[in-house]
Length: 174
Ligand SMILES: CC(C)(COP(=O)(O)OP(=O)(O)OC[C@H]1O[C@@H](n2cnc3c(N)ncnc32)[C@H](O)[C@@H]1OP(=O)(O)O)[C@@H](O)C(=O)NCCC(=O)NCCS
Image (cartoon, rainbow, N blue to C red; front, side, top):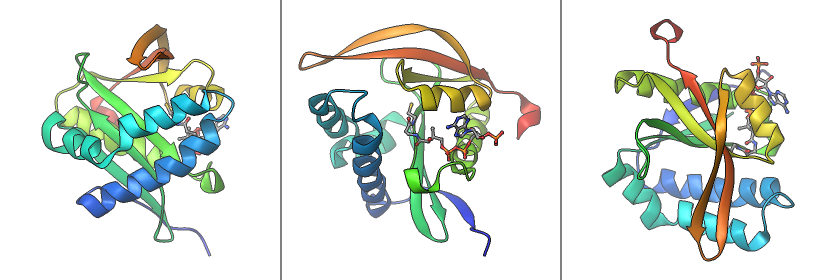
């Protein structure tokens, strides 16, 4: 049977708990060896605690989507304004290892880009860890271009050592 991919907007706290549960799994698997274990736990708490997710949606205007394959949630994305930089940002894009390369990230990104256009953005930006070669390859395949490096102090002695990438949003792509 051909798997059915579905992308939908996050609608309630249960959906946000689903996002956090997926992040717990995907982050610990994917970032092990790339980021310190202590930093992974710190960033999970900082980015996915219930209060943080609720504040993203209710106060910051960040939109979340869930991807499901055959009705099981397998990935998520978040996009919207950033608290420290202007513009429209893809904040999160994560797909469970077991279901990669089946178009979930492409589908999630399509939704984020569509929202960006609706909000009048000319481009969509993101930050990606400089050692995250898998994600960088995928983003380049999806049309993003590397701009520059960006190191940010995130507290507790941790830094994020990222590339900034961006992609122009053309009307015709919708
Ligand atoms: C990056 C990630 C979200 C991609 O998700 P995915 O669902 O496998 O991606 P898709 O299947 O939609 O693929 C999108 C495109 O990237 C390409 N791609 C996917 N995996 C790739 C890989 N390992 N190497 C090169 N290209 C790849 C696909 O071929 C596809 O292009 P195509 O449609 O022209 O064939 C997923 O690998 C992931 O969650 N990684 C770990 C978490 C992470 O690093 N997230 C980004 C944080 S900034």
